[in-house]
Image (cartoon, rainbow, N blue to C red; front, side, top):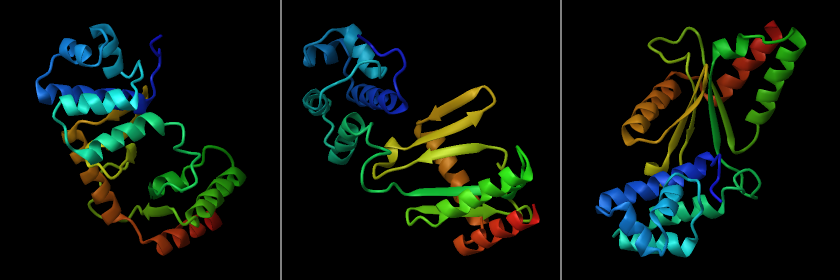
Length: 209
């Protein structure tokens, strides 16, 4: 039975399979024949609404003349490790770039604000976590009004950007979009304080509240 609400990773796996098929000039009907299924099931796979075995995925890649082993292995990883992202033993590297306006905005009382800043500082001590602050007085920085999550890995073409908006979140995976958001991240990082200076900055804000 097809999934009614596929996860972002499931949708991305299907999208990449469709891109691979399109690049090879193979129709959806022919692709379905190659793996012994029907066009409806093939459409559900490419929409992330139906799963696909590792054997079928690798066979499809070979029929699409895709010999990028790093890409294929990453797609297999999308399939078998989607539930292990937060629970596997090795810590995931996480980098946060936070504008000063976010640190100074109080959504509750002063006590809660101090607790939130203390939590950020505590997390910044983790070996896999980097927190850097973009201060108000930095010149030439734009885009501070956007909240963005950029997920990158060893295969750049599988990167994903999540943009938060008033009416929900949007996932971007087109190469042109990823290039744009990578450039924005580079600009934000260049405008941010060093790690140690960022911790000191957050400490000062906490003391001022």
